[in-house]
Image (tube, helix red, strand yellow):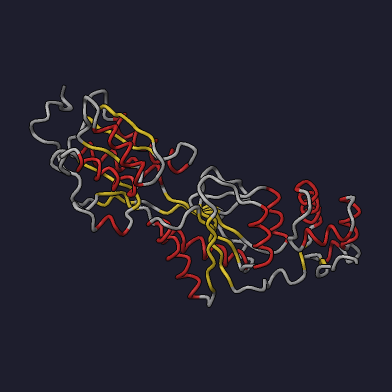
Length: 356
């Protein structure tokens, strides 16, 4: 039995002519029309090499599936590493707010930390045919980008893990400036023996905020010392890395945590050692997630506009879908220092001072 043919291909403008058909794609790819049909419909059983070749030819000829402008599902899909963090909850709220405005539903994909989006996920997208995708941290393989574009499914990356390709729309925040503001705040309070818990070094935004933090401290001169511990962005990592810093012979008087989740873990490590915040130790977080206001003491932090980033990404997806040629491919929202009760000047008995 022959394969079911997909909807006809059509050229996006007259200059391509009407003679180019599914058969031409098949001939140039040296495969059967049935194989092209399977690729177009997102079916499994086709080798990645063949799939990439078919998608490349479709893009080269400028063809998309008829009906790609109107996917079946009135859905926005958000793709997250994990869903059980305050960061993810804020992202979901942002995307959901935009979806409600447009009468859309939201579907959530959780794919795990540091794992690539696989063929099963792509096959699911081809079946769901959402209005667009909001990808958190994730980037796409070239073949995946071609596949989505050939179906008219736009995508935007939020807080990309690396430098996104020029053809990938992305929404982020001013991480370097946020880290720099964190450093200046602790210096302004008089701290000179400072610790930091970095996030994953394979993440661009993590490196950027630590780079800004270091830059502020380096500008203050040699009297300021910095000791760092590395961890992922979870509470457990904050507890472990924070414990390492607090057990050092020269304990820091202030610690900058790479995010608020780490800061909560650091609170626990300090409490276990009888270290009072902010009397004995200042703690500064990053993100300004809702729980930062209700922990005790309330957490000073750098506000990253997480919900607004998600809203901006969702709106960008829909505008790209509408064919807005003026849509920017990169948007960075501003961060801001939020001072609460967890940071204060170092104790007067501290023997280290900037004048030494």
